[in-house]
Amino acid sequence: MAKAETLHVFWHPDVLKHDMGMVAFEVPRYPFLAVAEKHVEGPDRVRNMFSILKKGPLAKRIRWHKGRPATRAELLTFHTPGFLADLERVTKSKGRGKWYTRTTLFTPKSYGPVKAAAGTAIAAMDHMLDGKGTLTYALVRPPGHHASPDTADGYCFINNTALAAQRAIERGAKRVAILDWDVHHGNGTQEGFYGRDDVLTVSFHMDHGAWHPKFHPQTGKADEVGKGRGKGFNLNVPLPMGTGDP
Image (cartoon, rainbow, N blue to C red; front, side, top):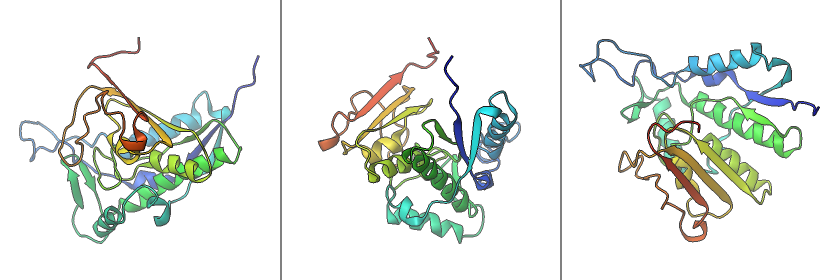
């Protein structure tokens, strides 16, 4: 019987400090609701995942590693200076912060957590590239696949996966693939690599189409295959609503 692999999990507690509160569907903004609910992308979601990995049946097969914040130079390997400057302005603002979309709020306290998520993803990639563990996982939030180089969207501000892929390229990897499995199209990741042939981007998602002319103009359709040098290096697999595992 083959020996079970060790799962190397990278974690930084600061990812729990990003909290959009009860912002997605508030009663004042949606008066047909009876009560406001906490945002679906809240810290408790990942807090429970952390607990399951610590206490669950796989606990003995997991080795934990400390994550770290990303540097500004690392963030700039995928994101534009203007976009980062906009996030940084929010950290100095008063009030609740900036709404990038109607469900995506960046608060004055969010920049530290998003840098922790990004840096932890990069640290996990470095660990794997150093040959220290082929099965490596970064347990981070907020998510990132809707964040393009210059926009935030869909609860995402910094594209953690794209930064990890970029790190692999910078360290000499010749074939890098991103497999995105989510109910929504990984439009930000697609946008960032759309003209490149060094990263294959693949997205499995519900066939929902574009939902905003600025933040999510990409359709996620199968005809979005890349452009220029990147033609053929973007693969979308839009699935009908209700598609199950079979």
